[in-house]
Image 1 (cartoon, rainbow, N blue to C red):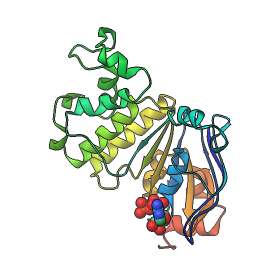
Image 2 (tube, protein in one colour; image 1 turned 120 degrees about the vertical axis):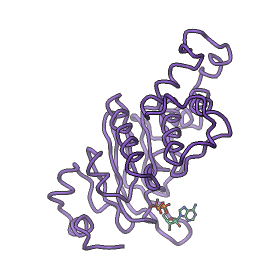
Image 3 (tube, rainbow, N blue to C red; image 1 turned 45 degrees about the vertical axis):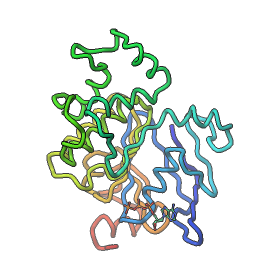
Image 4 (cartoon, protein in one colour; image 1 turned 30 degrees about the vertical axis):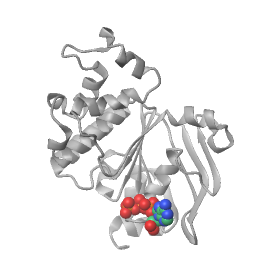
Length: 254
Ligand SMILES: Nc1ncnc2c1ncn2[C@@H]1O[C@H](COP(=O)(O)OP(=O)(O)OP(=O)(O)O)[C@@H](O)[C@H]1O
């Protein structure tokens, strides 16, 4: 489990996150919803162990991350994959971009360099790469150059690269904000597939309908903290916080 307990973060005088608590377990999808600029990315960066909170604690699988030594923290960070809002692919084929997910995993770089036949599929691409591309529906684009992909396809390749890395936890920052309904649907299916494979997935999104479709639990981020974190059905049908209710019903517009 990744657990943020009572975390706060300010940039200069601006308090972005104040006393927020959230956890994610393997095998569940948690959505963080809230308007633009409210601190969703900041929270994801804390969950990814990139950003140290000013106050509060971050635990990963029982270890208090910022009290651990640097080597332990690096080891823990390997369990977390992140897909950023903008797909940033290299000037190379789709397969090479996804293979990078394997290369940054300990041990895989050597295995790839040695060209171990056991990890290669029939066309010479590692099976883990083919498998990850299959999840996002792009297994037929292995050899295509990344710069010739549509925006939606590029975002799906970024997702596949994170899956190939084989993390325990996967964090997605607005994964479909610029995508059409078809690509959005494919990413949402890939999120469900990741959960079914046992990953703990956190999705930051300003699209509350998306949260309702894909999440098991939802954290509503308004102002500088969560107004409410709970099961998706409770948040959408019977929220206990008045601000949550107004946000969900559209009365509270930011
Ligand atoms: N490194 C930084 N230095 C200074 N201010 C920052 C930094 N990172 C974020 N902020 C500020 O913190 C606030 C929250 O930003 P954040 O990116 O976490 O929000 P968000 O909810 O993810 O927004 P969006 O949905 O638009 O990406 C913003 O006002 C932003 O300008």
